[in-house]
Length: 113
Length: 112
Image (cartoon, rainbow over all chains, first blue to last red):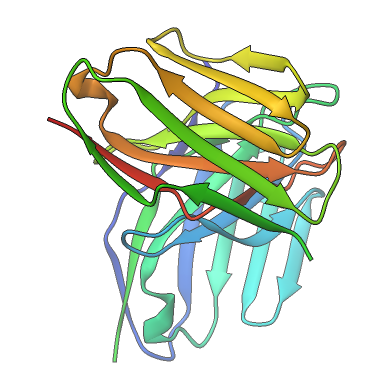
């Protein structure tokens, strides 16, 4: 069974600090990787996509992918209270034209003012 | 721009009653469509996905069914709800050939 594992947290960081969220996956053939943010009671919101090994930066967010280690991470710089949410890692486990995603259970991030 | 709608936003239903949840997407053609369920304390579970009208793939055997009567409309149904059907139901879409999925606002279903 294809699995995506995340530390459930909670991860607590002070405002302005760097938050580091980690995810491992079991399907070595996975090609696409995503981070979603989900506020309590709301639907997930896509914040980062990464497809190649290395780092991808977008504003305060950096996604890091290491396919050899089957590891993907999300760094949030200058953390803000508005970043307080559950962050979901998702991995494409489909094939052909059917892009099925497998989600981790999420890591709850709390940013303290 | 693309938008995705789901209704109703919340629903309370008795055990054994039928269910119909609707999802529509605007601003795109021939999207891939997905139904997920998120139960309390659990991760997102893919229930169904569709790559075109009338084409439905089921991921988990259960008492739910899905239909896609129009290109941008996706419906989740049940003839008789179980207590275990309670959860947060999310519809998502992606472009044909695209892997990024975008979620609707969700329907919170409570079965009593």
